[in-house]
Structure formats: structure tokens, C-alpha cells
Image 1 (cartoon, rainbow, N blue to C red):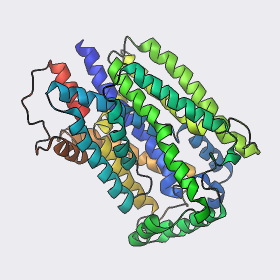
Image 2 (image 1 turned 60 degrees about the horizontal axis):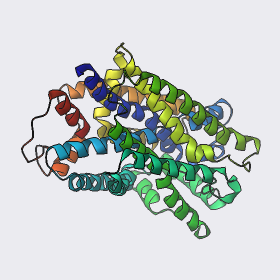
Image 3 (image 1 turned 135 degrees about the vertical axis):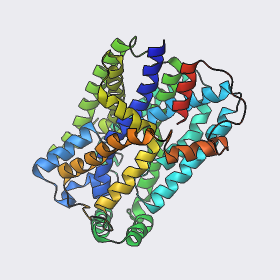
Image 4 (image 1 turned 90 degrees about the vertical axis):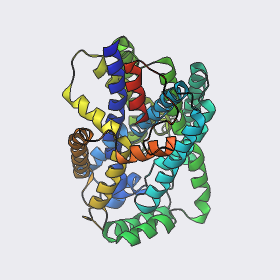
Length: 414
């Protein structure tokens, strides 16, 4: 039991850390080309082998690692709620405070640093997820499957409906060209002003933004719900016993995810963007591939062999929020004009090597940091606010728990 419990704790941390490796690679396209420019490689002269690598990233990485983070968000939410209940505290009250701070951090992140923030969305989604906190696993599965089905249907329509060609207009292209100059050579104030005030869409396209805002939660909500269900049914409680289940699910989801995403990326390049189903990779494929990656990674913990790299993934995962924000600080400094000014200039392959070097540094530094401190500064602030305690601990007396359960609760809260 002790070994199984330990693997469960490390697996949760490791998955968080693993997701950040893909998140920084996917975000590199936004750091270097902008939130809209990443889908317009022709405006940055991306061609040949670099264009092929760009396509590869959109198939294997973009849209398939952020959902892993969402899955772990849902799983951690349920585990934290269970821990709060065991301490006779009100889960929804504490979780609401936690989500409020995430939302505020996200707003600050997006306003003062980078346009690709996800914390605002996660904080807002957390309040919605409170409606499902006490629901049965079957209910969570039904809702997740229903939302996935809706996204699959939306993706089945040809791209000329406007659903899969977001912001593809002359006005948007002009905006992207302007962003290339501003982000590449502008000062911090100039970049911040452009990010917060420039209009990427014309007045006639305002409805596109409204549609995107409505669809975004639908696309990612199933992963939150599936993560909550995984916590309730104990999907990762015994990795060894679940080895075959992980293997089967990984094989199915990775295959289907890669197939649908490949079709969505490659078909338009051959003039087939109007084919029915070409958008399924964008609306559904990313989540399916993310599930495949989750189960494939979990297989590493079902093995009797202890891979050294896993300990470093776990350390990055224990500092996930701090590391995520540090990625933004470092990468904007590398690509923006007030830093090295590599925006739109490094290329896709070189840009990927750059951000992987940043992540490698986090793999190296995170264990060293945890040798001296129990949690990261952002994680500590989140716990202080959640519990309204400078120690970051619940104020009420704690019931005696078995050592392994206490360790798991501590990791989940971090």
C-alpha cells in the first residue's frame, strides 16, 4: 500500500511537470509570433523545413498539453475538497477564494506581461466547476462526453462557416504585421499599450470574438470534468494495477488524436479546408490526444523501474504555477523588443530549442529549490489566501490521518 500511495503522489506531480514541457513549446509560437500570428506562418516567412516543423507542432503539441493541465486542475480540485472535508472545513468557500486569486493573477499576467495567459480562464472556470463538485462520477462522465460530442459536431462543419477560421481577415493580418514591428523592437510600455488597446478585429468581425469566447469553455471543460472524475474513481490510485488500462487507453486516444489533428492541419494545406470534418482536430482532437498523453505518461509509474527524469518532472510539477509564470517572464524577455528582440526572427525550430533550454533549466533548478523550500512563492501565496493563514495551513485542528494520506493531501494543496 505504501509503495502504491507513493507512486500516486509522484504521478500527480509528474503529470503537472510533464504538461509544462509541452505548454512552453506550444506557447513559443505565441511568444514569437503572437496569439493570432502563430496561425499565419506566411506573414513571417516561415517555409520549407521550418513550415513542416510548424505543422508538426500543431499536430503533436499545440492544443494537447494545456488540456493536461486542465485535467490535473480538475483532479486537484476534488482532492483538495476531500482534504478540506476531512478537516471539517467548507470546501466551496476555500476553493472560491483560491479561484478568485487565480483569476486576479491571470488578469495581472495578461495585462502586464503576456497575452497568452490561461490563469484568468482557469480561475473563472473554477467557479463553474463548483456546480459539479459533489456530483457522481457517472454524471461527470456524461457531461464530459456530451460536451466532447458537441465539439465534434461543430468541427464537422466545413471551415467556410467561420467556426474554424478564426480572425482570418485583412484587418487581422494588418494587426499581425503591426505586432511584428511592435513586439520585435518596441519598449515595454509600447508593447503593453499595443497588447491592451490595439483591436485585432474590425467592427464587422466582433461576432467572431463573441463566438470564440463562448466556444473556448466548451472545448476545455470536458478535461476539467474528466480530471474530477478521475479523482473520484481513483484512476491513478494504483498505477501498477491499472497498467493494462493505461496502455489500452493511451493506444486509442493517441492514435485517434493524432489522426484527427493531422487531418485538420494537413488538409487545408492542400486546398481541402472545406471538407466536412476538417475542424474536428481543432475542436476535439486536442483533448483526445491529451488523454492519450496522460495515460502514456502514467504507464511510466506502472513500471517497476524508477526513471531518474521522473523525479525532475515531479519537482517542476510541485512548482507548476511558479514555473508557468517564470516561463512567461523569461520567454517574453527573450523574444520581445525590450529583451533580445527575437520576435518573429528565430524561426520555429530554433525557437523550440530555445524554450526547451528554458524548460531544461527548470528541470535542473526545481529540485534544488525544493531542497531548501517546501513550495514555490506563488503556490505559497495561493495557500495563504486559500486558508487566510500566514502559515498557509488550515486554522482548525487537523484530524489524525494515516501518514500516506497526509502526504498526498500536502502535495495536492501545493
